[in-house]
Amino acid sequence: MATEEKRVIAPAVTVSHNDEDRGLRIAVNLAGAPKESVELEMGKEGFCVKAEADEFRYETCFMLAHRVRGDKAQARFESGLLTIQVPFEDTLRGHRVPIE
Image (spheres, rainbow, N blue to C red):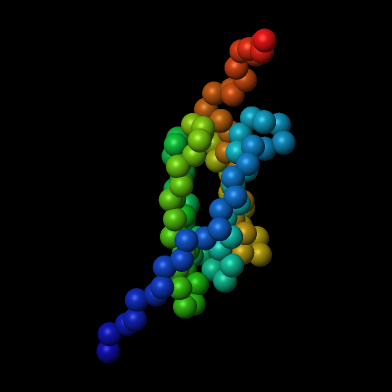
């Protein structure tokens, strides 16, 4: 008997600067997926997430606006929400330009 392929869903993702403006806070809604099924790959310019729920699976990859230190990322999964904290590769503070 052939197994049925699960439907693939792109999860809702929110990306914002953290409170100290030294990195990103990324939230990925993986409702219905158990922690054991979550896979996260973090690079300098983006990340990919996969997770399995009973009747579907989540899959997505995102490019980030700023380069980050993926090797320093921290992730937490609670109540279906994957939260990732990752520092910027370089400071984002630039030279202030006067406006005439």
